[in-house]
Length: 383
Image 1 (cartoon, helix red, strand yellow):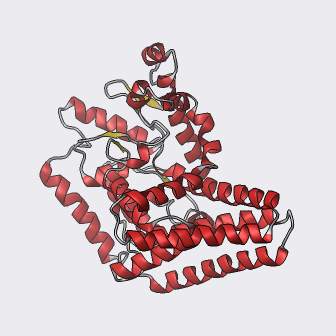
Image 2 (cartoon, rainbow, N blue to C red):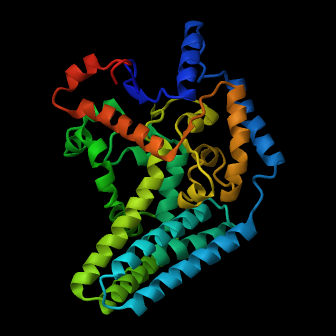
Image 3 (cartoon, rainbow, N blue to C red):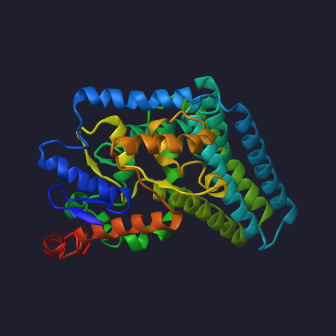
């Protein structure tokens, strides 16, 4: 890892990113920034890539894929709750809780795809499906999620603009050093606290959904609230009617904890440890999306487990691209970036976690009592 002493940004220096930084230094010496092409180039580059992707048919609907994916996930959802009822009062229900945690995550991925209008041809159909799998099935507001997630896509890893980097973790040393609330303590040890905190992620998502329905001017607010209420009433009634209070609480903790942990582990590799931008940064759309995202290498198992979000670069460039087409778009985008010397980073799953945690730890040093001395001693050689 390297800390940019001029902007206090932590950026990865492994693989393709390393050579890109060297190239950027050469351009800076000649008076031109590689990440700041002239206005004419900015508009034309992404158009060229978009044309290649469209000509390959990768923006076309994949209805058959989604029908099968929806059917299989629905069978798993119904089957999980059927097993719950049949098993009855038993500690083996914790196994069912783990299974349903994974099923909830798969439903969340389908809701994500619907929110990006990947599944159906009409906005209304995508929204209705998202409300069913989100609000009703797993207790997450599709209206809140779309509004929040669209801000993230427009300004990924941009402090002051991306809601995903303004939460309980610090992504830049600026924020870690200037924070004065209780979060400063979390920032200090965020690399160590990261995975334990993921067990609370589902609760945070539920809380944000309910708060948005009560306070935000989201579309169809009343109906979204009714669906959320139906979810929580049905979910809690099912658990407490079948299980004793102690087993019911254990079931809830395991199912919701693992659901949040699963979701958090899926999100973690995408942007943590990648370029952090400042609000108002003039980086063009193509580079904004590529420089702030990381892909995770893997086959069909990784693709399914991560809901296609392991192709984070392609997803950010083409949010409405159907999930199964992301794998086919990946070599096209990688080649395009190589032609233009744009850093394109992809790595293995565990290496992606290592990079993310190293970044969080490096940033967390700036929140510690000796932050000033850390800043003076942090150099590319020892960070």
